[in-house]
Amino acid sequence: MAKLEEKNMKEEFMVLLGGVIPAKDFDELKKMGVANVFGPGSMTSQIVNFIKDNIEK
Image 1 (cartoon, one colour):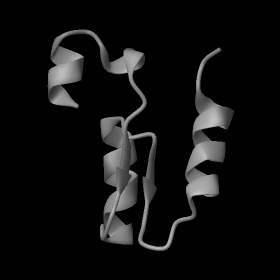
Image 2: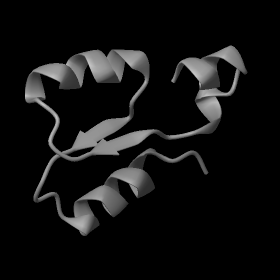
Image 3: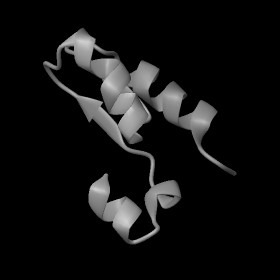
């Protein structure tokens, strides 16, 4: 995120995270610019729908 911000490109990318990430860290990650965090068991359709709903057209 810092590199994207440094190059004034933060708004050019949608950053998604996945894996075993403690729920207590979600808010801080989102404050840093992460669009969403998907934990284990997240359905591919859920991720695809998030992207479709939040991408600029």
